[in-house]
Image 1 (cartoon, rainbow, N blue to C red):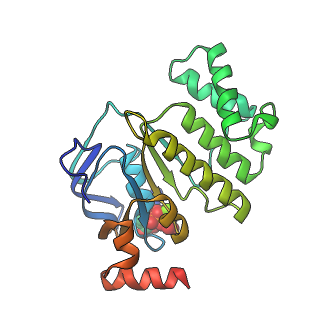
Image 2 (tube, rainbow, N blue to C red):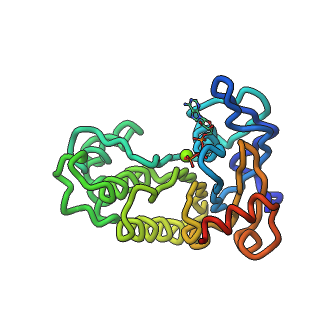
Length: 240
Ligand SMILES: Nc1ncnc2c1ncn2[C@@H]1O[C@H](COP(=O)(O)OP(=O)(O)OP(=O)(O)O)[C@@H](O)[C@H]1O
Ligand SMILES: [Mg+2]
C-alpha cells in the first residue's frame, strides 16, 4: 500500500542518515498518503525514532530525497513528553499561543483540550507533578489542540502501566475515528513494540531492521501473510 495516486504527505527516496559511524537509516524509500495510519515496528536500534524525527524535520538526511507537503500541520509526541514548569492548562495554552492564538482564546481552547482527555480536574496543577500517564495524555491534548493533519508518535504508551496504556490508546483511536469523516483525515505514524496496539491502531505496518525497511504491508497481511524471515521471527518473538 503506497498511497496510490493521491498526492503524498511525504515521499522519501533512498534516504540515508548517519550518527557519526552509525548508519541509522539506509536507503529508505517510502511514500505516505494523507489519512494513512502507519506503524513502525522493529528491534531496538532499528531506526524507528530516527525515521519519525526525520519525518518531523528534527534531523536531516545525509543522502537521498525527501519531499513533504508543507501545507499539512504536523505534531509529534515523544516517548517521554517534555512539560514546561507551569500548569497543565498553560502547557497547552502556550503551544497554541506560540502558533498565533490570542492568549485568552488559547486558555479556553486549552481547557477544552484538557476536557477531551479528561484532565480538566488537574488543569491548575503543575504539569511536572502529574503522573506519567497523565503527562502523556496532556501531551496528546497539547498536540491535538494544534489540530494537526499529521500526528507522529514515538512509542506513545511505552512508559505507561496497562491502565494508562489503554486510556491513551483509546484516545488515539478516538482521534483517528473523529478525523476519519473529516475532509482531511488525520495521518498517523507511530512506533510501537506492542503488536496488539499495532493491530488495533494501524492500517499499514513497516518492519525495520538496521535502518532498512524490510517489510511494508497492510496490517492484515503483516499479521497473516508470509513475511521476510527476520520480520517473521520478530513477530513470533514479540507475541510470545
Ligand atoms: N543521537 C544519536 N547519536 C548517536 N547515535 C544515535 C543517536 N540516536 C540514535 N542513534 C543510533 O541510531 C540507530 C537507530 O536508533 P533509533 O533510536 O532510531 O532506533 P529505534 O528503532 O527507535 O530503537 P528503540 O526501539 O530502542 O527506540 C541506533 O543504532 C542508535 O544507537
Ligand atoms: Mg526509538
